[in-house]
Length: 237
Image (cartoon, rainbow, N blue to C red; front, side, top):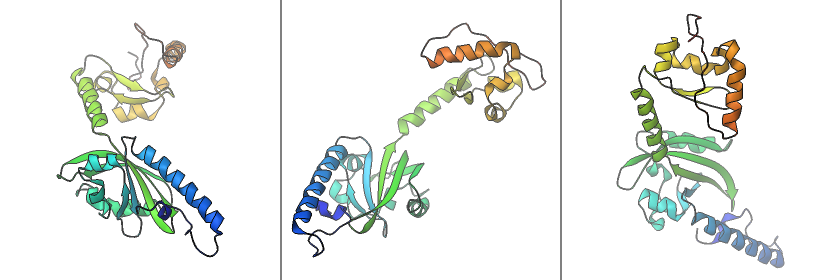
């Protein structure tokens, strides 16, 4: 796949293509290839071109080779399924099939050459390039993100029943809650996350809560703010 002309949907040099047009298309393709190379070699994400009919890797960037522990030449011609954690490798074929209908964004686990596995998010979509169906897969290692999430959860849990801690979205929903919410209000975490949190705020405190949210959305700090929430027994705390 070293010839960039393999990555365009027309075959240059066919009788139906005027020589001048072929030269123009070739130059355009060379320019596109140069832009791809510039992008591919300067991003941390792993980029793979996977042939749809057999799942073989036909092109990979340096980040992919380094991230999986291979040389680029060793990745090309290898089945992309080998890069999946064996525990979830059965999902590979279904993932490839799904890209026939729509672009795909999933979280899964991949495997390095040394056998170690790691969590990834994968953005994949298919296209016809050079008359061949190709799946472009961009993969990002999310190990640090998952560790940060675990650290946050450990911090939340360590506060136990003493302090109510939460992460909420600006559209008004709880994203994460520590156990103190359940012990204090009596709701399961899933119940609190189903409805806008304003539904639980005391009616007399809603205007102030909205104002506090507006300040936070503008990047302002907030301290000493208090409001009351309805408990499952309909009392307020």
